[in-house]
Image (cartoon, helix red, strand yellow):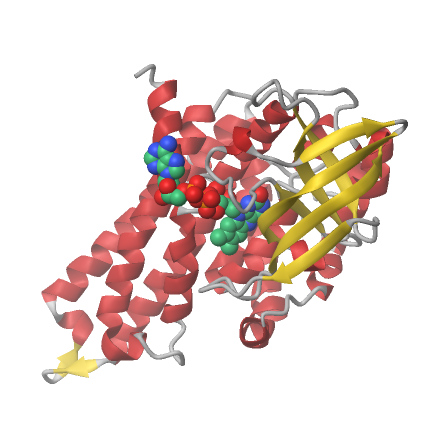
Length: 380
Ligand SMILES: Cc1cc2nc3c(=O)[nH]c(=O)nc-3n(C[C@H](O)[C@H](O)[C@H](O)COP(=O)(O)OP(=O)(O)OC[C@H]3O[C@@H](n4cnc5c(N)ncnc54)[C@H](O)[C@@H]3O)c2cc1C
């Protein structure tokens, strides 16, 4: 067993950390305040292989693996979970189905420009009335000659308002629950595809989230990922398993940021004549947070490593998502408590991580859904 990052991993970690501190940190306040994502980051990061680090270099990726992607997501989250959310949608759900199952044409037209940051991608599964029960989506794609006509609405779509394309889940055969689903790549500007509204969120404000409407939206049949009707649910599951591991890194980065901010604050805040870090309660809480962060990180990277070995990690990925997202809630709550009244003020950054991290037991499969997956995998 070897729990060390490789030399290559460490070089990547140093490089992305520098990039985040120098190129992203100065943009955070404005992006969070305006709710406008600094789009130039896509190209800038793509150019340096930071945007989609686990895809092959020949396609425009960084040539790394799942561990590399986790490093990138962790480092981004330490500075701004909102900005990280937009970028990880690109490195994960908006690109993986095309990479794994897309035709050469789709790769050329959408995947490669996405990996290099020239195109921004989004992934549309959730609908206004359908979230956890994904097999119940109502969006339909009906064949008409050499096109499919898509009708439906997608809700809460990360990058929706700024995307150049969206990977949309729709039923080609609604009589086959789950298996009759396909994924389609729909380009911005296609008649019938509109961003009906940009959504105002509690946190992760710099990631732009929207509702997308498809109304008699005609897309060429070759925009269907996989090239034949059915099988989209497996493509989705594949992307979601990978996404749950990345989610662990998202929680680790956010938890590390909370620890760093709180330890610093506790050393500076004086009460009863001494820094509050000298009180046993504060020390114990910080010691516990640091322990949890270490366990979260170790488990996430171990699962990323298993994924890189080609192992079936359906259960472990759900465990990563469940454990890291849930424990993060305690970490954020304790961090806020140690900050006292100042923590509740907008000028202190802990409130931003507290708001951002609240999301993580909800998206990409709620904690309840992860428990269902784990129980099923355990044969219960
Ligand atoms: C900021 C943000 C960004 C997002 N980005 C995207 C995106 O890019 N693309 C995309 O497709 N979606 C996206 N989503 C959607 C997200 O994945 C869903 O919100 C999530 O899957 C939960 O679905 P829901 O909100 O409809 O909740 P619901 O499914 O309505 O669930 C409500 C509650 O009921 C619980 N519940 C449901 N079923 C069960 C059950 N069988 N047993 C026990 N409890 C149950 C849930 O756990 C939850 O607590 C995003 C959401 C947000 C908030």
